[in-house]
Image (tube, rainbow, N blue to C red; front, side):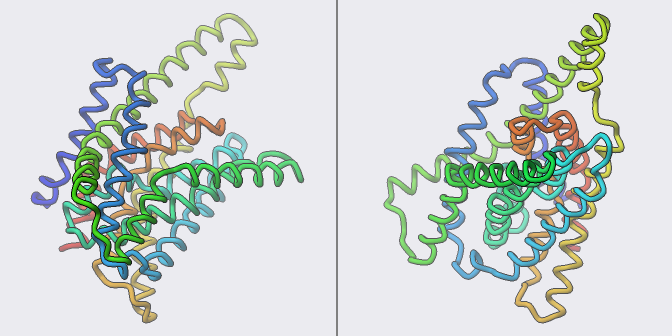
Length: 344
């Protein structure tokens, strides 16, 4: 347990550093989108490209990993939508709650952390999970989020959302970097020396900047939620219109937050573990190391970029931010326990 904790501690310490810097306003909140842009469009794609190009093509095209991960992701989405929809939580909020339960923080956190713990052979299964979540899980949840409209309007909104999600995938550099890495691995083409060194420098920057940015994003969400609540309280004192705004700005109850946190950190990895063992028992060529890798991917906290998606599509971003925050806090002790249990 202690050796695993010593490996994971710096990762969570960098998240805490980013959180503290943003809360103390040492890092201006206006600078956080710039950090996000650097990670999403430069550093992280280079990391994925480098891992993809250096991973045997068989590991990158492991159908058993894709099947187990895909079934579990879709099951989590369906389950969370089914049990969270209520009078307060419509399709929009339920869909993004499902996305935050099914989508781990694999890119920002999982790739460097799991490679550090499990070695370079973990890169292939990790890349498969990232590709599935970027292309399938995110698109499905965005489409579901548009079903709040009645009848044909809801279906039309879902189709528009699906097209918007597809456009988002096409302009996202991460799927393209994964595809390019797969092609380089299949063709056994080395990158030219200067290009390889440039990519390596950007890839090396991905982990610390991404982790620091996670903390800053979580702090910004907490600060904005507090300011929103304060302004709502002032508006409430001004009359009926204020009371309506205040009611809308109230924090989501814990009953809308904690079950999703439990699904993310407990039910999701357990489901992947059980289904993976079942797949092995049925004769699917799923290796034990690959199964351990994807179980640990599922045990990661929720992806921080879901908060930005929820804000863009008008969902309850305060609820999503609280889920991300608590999965990150609880994962500090729970993730090393999962690693120790699987490697024990």
